[in-house]
Image (cartoon, rainbow, N blue to C red; front, top):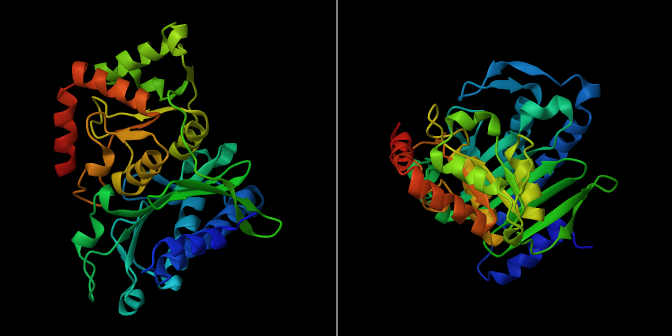
Length: 344
């Protein structure tokens, strides 16, 4: 079987100008992922379950493993010399690696070090989501132009899911490939080549506990999913785990839609644009699926600040388009809410 490192270096042959920096950067991320995987698997024995006693920039309580995972990726990216700066869910400001800038590092990494960490204690799959951008300007300082790039500028989007098995899934815009971690020899092996999402799918994933706060377009779509219509394989099955990475990964393999909409209480939703929505949207599109905020393509949205939130409708293309149609018909006012939230 082909290893992740072999696959990365083989891909370099498609780009005659490639010099190896990106390959090294992706390998640095995989090394940190192995360490985080070890910590996740032994968390109950090592006394690293539970809260850390602090909150992140979003005001969310940090778990001990949130902090550990964040530190591992900071160390890996800092020591690897290919990353000039890192945006993390766990840090209020951009982390700048001054030594790497001096070494002419070309890349910016935006990352959610441990997505779904609220589920750590109950053995639900959790993961890491990352986006890699190429710097816009090369010099001694990191500019906001380097950091706030739309998804159309993305070099790579990927995630690592720590579940019954650990997988690294990524795309550079040439299809989606998945690698399963073999802990007996410490390597990621190519196990899912050229991943494609089934369309239409038969699964919808949404936290229906928030139903009363949903836009009318989302409410209508949920009812549509529940209707009995054998010709369209409805009613669909509802599956909701509660971590973006777990629900998306299942739908990627089986076909379906994941929705985290804006609500009347929180028009911008919960998910972060730079290091959750954008990398997942890139993967979805490369797998033949679609991702939007209910009105616009996620990859076209220009970020205004590093921790900006966005609603997310992602999955099988026809399912997302049906949900968008209901939003356009019944909840057009939410488009204005979404636009205003970007400026906040």
